[in-house]
Image (cartoon, rainbow, N blue to C red):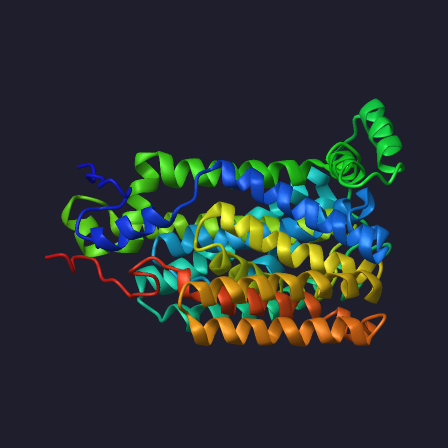
Length: 426
């Protein structure tokens, strides 16, 4: 029996008033393009004002894509799981399993086997989480934390068992893995480089971004973006996605209408694990050239934060992943100079946001944001370069600030994290 959809795309009985209000807040799709153009304009203006040429260089964009994709894939895994009502704190552990899977299978059987091995190992972690939470009703947070701890120890044991004695391998790393294919459009890349080198305001910046998309672009980056689009289409444009989201909103109502709640939850967590495993495989095969112990660096947790920032939707997840990945890249490539330039942008945007909040009648929130903007602005004018130790903290600080300021507009699935027993609808 199919689930009747309301105008909001969710099952009946899940709060139509809330959903209608949410629909009223949605922006037209052309605003996405305007937002992208606005971001490029701001960065181009910052480049001209501050002289931080690396803000929009093609090298920075290429490195940023490599930093963004594993966070986005982990967040995408979290989105599948939480849309079905299962909190997946174990994304980090599933990524760790994926790094080993890519290292082992990639070394012995080639790059494509490495990708498959990463996905399968991530799905193995997802299977454990699904059995614990969906079948046995274990608290989702406890299960996820346990998976993170178990995966860390298991991978250290497996690495010692499988990589010691191999050329270039050891207890903390695998031998070199075969490279995944890359895409380069030579003539277009060369032409765009000539435009980038002109340093013309905005034009050179757009050329640099386009050049990054046609120069040594990893095929896994393309696959990741296709998975993002596929997730949006499946979850919001198919009956399967409608049923899966209904399970995360009101499992009792969904079951009363004939939806196999446990089956959808189980499938969603397995998909979640596979995507997280692929994220780990990306780190091993694209961001690096082999498996290394501690390679994930907490990106599973950041992916979860990016998903929350994106309000449990693919487009917002991409924006959150881009925010973290780009700021991380700047800190690694040009250090304190580029991050110092970003302080000016943060200060101006915070002041503008505070004024907007005041105009809406939110005096306390507006005053706090203006205060933060003033402090950041004072910091920008008082120093010439951000110390190296602080540049490593910048992505985390910016992510926390954005989550704090955006928290009032977030709406998680209504039954997210709720333990559900089969037959509860009766």
